[in-house]
Length: 272
Image (cartoon, rainbow, N blue to C red):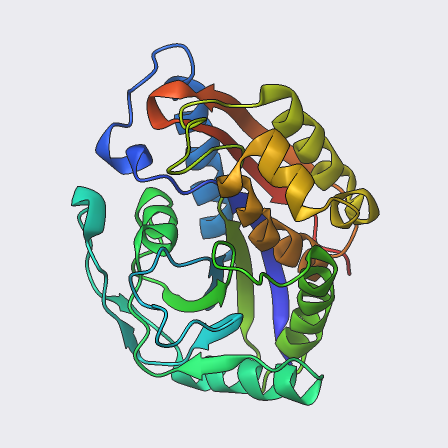
């Protein structure tokens, strides 16, 4: 059976790689947080990293825009958009298909892709955490093209994903990382604003495992108070539910105005 050995979440803006020292007041603490996350991942030594992110109309367009999609291939090519360097990363077709099969059996009508290219939502965490040599199973969640899956559905998906991981054949060690958020506005007059109070309240709930409070939020509330980019917290919800509501630790938070995004980095205790 498979074992979940690590769970965490991080923001994924391209500035993390393109301009890592953008804010001398906050950049060092974020760098320390990502270094710790990378070290903790290395220590747990996962065979596979399930990376939960959205896509920014690179891989998926309006001709086919799934709600959920899991990558099942032996190799994933990067888009290298936004000037981000990237290299192809190894996938795991067997694990991807097994997770897809289990989740469909559990009542989740998600799709799978044998040719899923990765944009910055996936590649920034891969490169910043130094996991490009590990096998990556990308897990897409629609966070930007309505209708979006509800936060409650994302919580249920995370719980089902935990079961699917534990049903994997063989002794497979799995890490899961949600990536996106926190507050930011994209392509609107509010772009550049950050709601630090909202971010800290959300992150505190995630640390406490208070998913009831999080899934009670409406998309209208999130959009109004934290921006359309904050709808990416769906990926955090999936990861938190997969880990189990057993607490965690906030490694860093910073309102990064040069990156026009509130940046959160956290690890989640894995319930046994």
